[in-house]
Image (cartoon, rainbow, N blue to C red):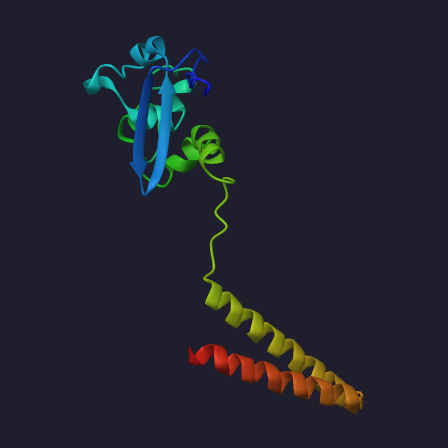
Length: 168
């Protein structure tokens, strides 16, 4: 028999199960009856699933009005209520709130980007071609003609591969 789910806040047996789908990603929160009532889950008008999912409500509540963005005036309570900041400067102002959420949701808190596979393959071939041309010129200058011939042949092979890849 499977183990019963435990409350995400206090580890008691969970009786309230919340699921939200955002951008095709499923976020689940399991709560015991006491924690659900304490967080206002049983009252739909006062409930913010974003608070629970972002784990912001797990942190001690700050004194109202203590931290406010200098640019737009957004407070931590505004962020919790609406689930978004008022301006780009808010990310610096509320860094201590954002960092733990990002670490919890992603592999890290720094955006490293993503490169399409085809573009990466083209760049790799282009870089190899550039390297071979440098080696060819160096071999010719130092009169290493066997190395120059090897580089020439490999350049032709890379250009042929590059031509095949770009034709698709």
